[in-house]
Image (cartoon, rainbow, N blue to C red; front, side, top):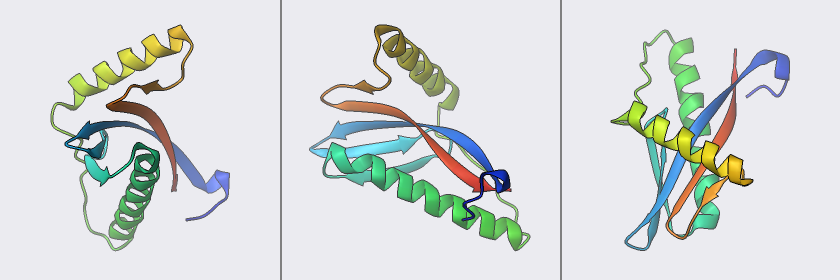
Length: 114
């Protein structure tokens, strides 16, 4: 990826992670990506790496002339509204990030080449 800001667009992605059966499962709502991790400390890095690989692969497909369609998670609009309302509530309470024992929500940013 190019590091110059003028050659990039920034996209904001909604991510939700939940603890299920002792394993953290994170979902990127816009891209439909799912990653797992044994700890909550590493789930964000794992998701960031998965998004980076996905976007690099997408850029390569586009450069080769292949069509590609982004498919968000099932029930995207409901989950997006839930996410945004919960984040707004937490922001009003003064926290930037929602976090409890078994759920973690964050907005991630990725730069993509033009």
